[in-house]
Image (cartoon, rainbow, N blue to C red; front, side, top):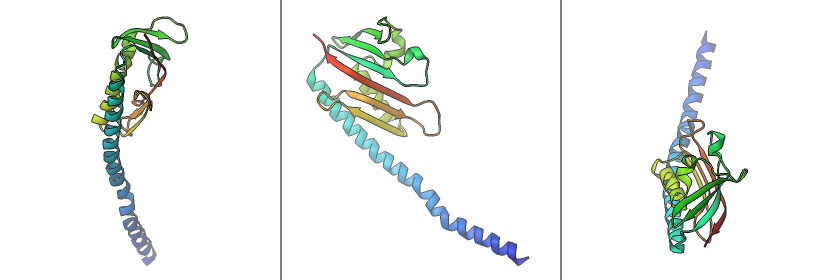
Length: 165
């Protein structure tokens, strides 16, 4: 009869010793995310300023959205902007115009900066952004808003950027 009591006591002590280790990582993760959030905000501000200094209002880029969404909303598409306004969005595959509503959030570089700002404002669980070193525009935006929710992540790729006359 003493053996079950000894085993139970040993299990409780063992769990008690492991409890602080189990509870520590979420605190470290939250602290780490807060620091990353500030760093992400500084990087965004730096690159947005770099982009704005270029004063580029006519450009085109290839855009892809690796989302959990309908194929028409994924691309890749070529987005053309003149005088800061989107003038065309065409499929890379077909060369035909696509439904612009699918790309409304992503159809200019300033709007892409807004997507990053939204990830920062919403304290996204994971935010990974790469910027063009010379012009400052984002080349890759990966956001996981909530680690506990599946299929709400976004993975955006911006490539083949060209200034046009």
